[in-house]
Length: 175
Image 1 (cartoon, rainbow, N blue to C red):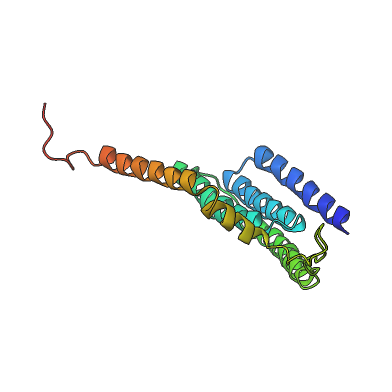
Image 2 (cartoon, rainbow, N blue to C red; image 1 turned 30 degrees about the horizontal axis):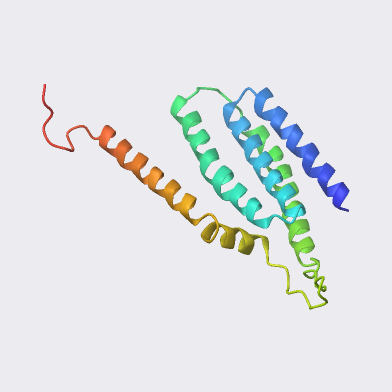
């Protein structure tokens, strides 16, 4: 079953990546990119990397794709498309997406229990921590200093961008 789901997600990812490049309408390309992002997240779920799947959806489908869509809308490309033909395609794609959501939810209910065993000394091993818990522990213990440095760098960059955008924020300009 894992191999079948991998080939499904992989083939849809490759197909939609080709559609992103091949479609002439930029809005359709963005929609194909959205489908690709969701399938990449589904591939992460099949690999038991739920945290990466959530980050994939939040960062790429939620933020980056919105920026792409804003750029497409700012370009204001004028095309006379007939939207009556798209209702059938939208209904079909919506039903496929609904079937995928139902399949993912039903598969989530059948997940395996965490592996329990014994250590080399014969003691009972604790339950294996979840993916998100391990990332959080590593981020706030081992990588705390680089994490804080990165946040300070981003803060300085944001303040610099605000200062550069608002000419005169520091007082009257001198010529």
